[in-house]
Length: 188
Image 1 (cartoon, rainbow, N blue to C red):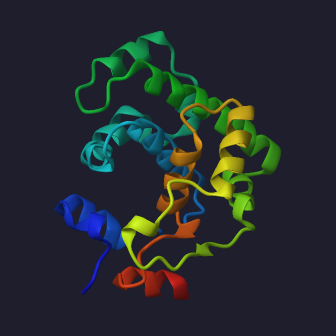
Image 2: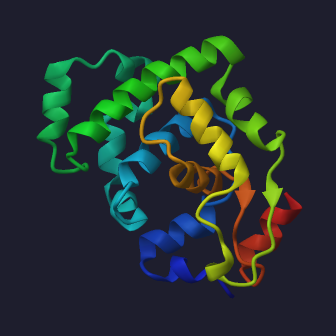
């Protein structure tokens, strides 16, 4: 069974590829989780974040935005001392700021799902890449998403991070056409 080349680097990445990557998500808590994790990944490998994912869930209250939005300096200091996550002050502060902005978006749009999926018209974009090298680092949609998120107070949401987010939550199908998941997600 053929798979995207990046999925073969580790068992954790293969599991993620086979069951999660590119599957359309509409649950606000999961959408927020990926927003935080993609921001944490900036400058690092996705494998690093995947390997720390469970520790992130524990450290960040299962990504309940209401709880994270209320984090004070004491909790931020505890997170900075947590070896299970990426201990970067700016990224941790961004997670707290993003939780607050996330809650504001929910107030305005009714859900984060309704807000974020509007950048691609509500349905996954089906790409048809022959090779991994053809997959872009960003798109027009990710540029627009990045600008709007930043305008709303989100941090660590550049155009490349936004595109990786779009891939992760199934807004775009970027499995290569020879990958078994491409056809499965294209039909969905």
